[in-house]
Amino acid sequence: MHVAPALTRAHGCAYDEGMRKLRVYIACKMTGINCDELVRRAKEDTAALEKYDIEVIHPVIAEGVPEIPKPLPEPTPDMMNIRWEEDQKAVRWADVVISTAPHVWSSGAIREHGKVRYDQWKPYISVWPEEVLVIPFTAQKEDDACVRTMDEAGRIASLMWGSRMKRIKWRIPIYMRHWDNVSLRKIILFFK
Image 1: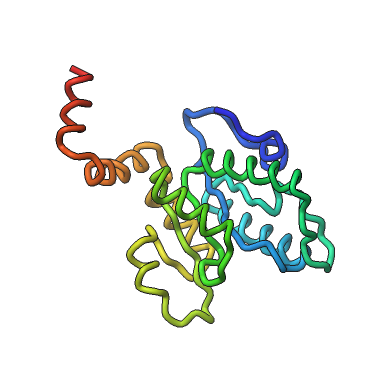
Image 2: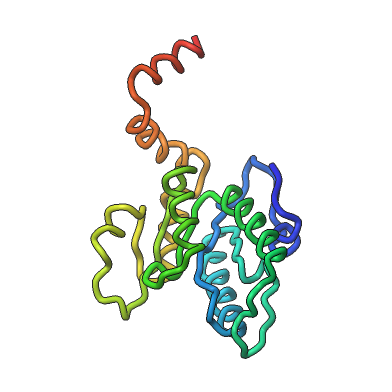
């Protein structure tokens, strides 16, 4: 398994697939937010999840966002290509993705949601702030969990998908819904 070097340095990611921690990627809006606020949120999110023995990949930490009271500078096209590639590797590496801003439009976060949920079939948790009084119906139906705090997200992620066997059991009904009987029979015959 390959993980981007910046991610392994920033998070000390383990490669051992044996008895490893649950790995969570945080999808968050970064554009237009002050760097010091991004870093503060990243530290809080990470601390909340680490209580549940979860290994966290946060793009703010991975990209080395400086703790300055200015908006995040617009990256160059070359830097954006590098960051995009690292984000894709991090999302593939993660077991669960948690969105911290499902209520605000973010081009990157929306695409990450689609890739995780409908391509990679990984659990997706959305954290809705208290100011959003009613969690949208579609989010309640499409996301695996809709919660109000990162602490709740960590508890649910650990409880529902904290082991490899739990993640496999969660995926089986998804596979069954998406594969027609002919394809399933072919796969069963292949293993006989």
